[in-house]
Amino acid sequence: MNSILSELLDGVLRIEICRPEKKNALTGAMYAALADAFAAAENDPAARVVLIHGQPGVFTAGNDLTDFLDHPPLAEDPPPPVFRFLQALRTLSKPLVAAVAGPAVGIGTTLLLHCDLVYAGAGAKFQLPFVSLGLCPEAASSLLLPALAGHVRAAEILLLGEAFDAEKAREIGLINAVLPDAGVLDHALTQARKLAALPAASVQITKQLMKRAQAALIEQTMLEEGRHFRMRLLSPEAKEAFAAFLEKRKPDFTNLN
Ligand code: COA
Image (cartoon, rainbow, N blue to C red):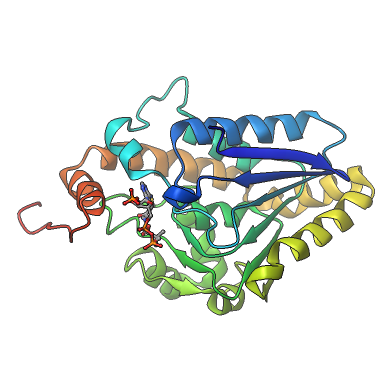
């Protein structure tokens, strides 16, 4: 079944992550479909804005941990789908809007750092548990989150892996507004349609200018994070953390150094 759905309407390419039985956890095939959808948006003049969302109860539980165990994305060239998706996210010239309801874990939160407008439901929950999974940050979150929230608040989120709610996400500037859960997608669509109705070239130039100062640093950071991330995926700590989640038990890192 296709778990990434897309529809172009009124200039807005709406991309839905749709694997609710696994909390929208993202597999390699889903990253490939997301990267393809972003490429299609980039190349289609009729797609003036991209909107990404999940279901009313979940944005995404992040990378599928079974996939991480069975098919770790280790290759450098050609890049595995997850890295293709990150590249598409980084380079998308059209505005990207997100509607978040429920959990947004791992890449579910880090992808928001690349969006232009983000709206979340009051019940949204954000978490970056990279360290407790034996991994390290991705999507240039090690650069973008401290820049947004300041080092100490980013450290609570990236080192301790503390989850935070929509109100805190708004306070640190990760999202624009907190809405009732049931209304978040409609509001995001309204905002996306407003963007789609504006002069497309002006919108894209403005986005590019706003991102210009950090563009090279974001690219370098993603490369550096990717090098560490690939190695961490093979670490005994990561394997223990993934297995523990899937076996519904607490991980035991005590004998691992
Ligand atoms: N990878 C693989 N399977 C996942 C998953 C993931 N990232 N997240 C959830 N699932 C699966 C669960 O194993 C479960 O499958 P099962 O019904 O076959 O047992 C199903 O999705 C429902 O998940 P569950 O944990 O029961 O839902 P919940 O509502 O209690 O909790 C989350 C939702 C998102 C908070 C929780 O699932 C979670 O923490 N997931 C892992 C997040 C994570 O570490 N992501 C990686 C970031 S790099």
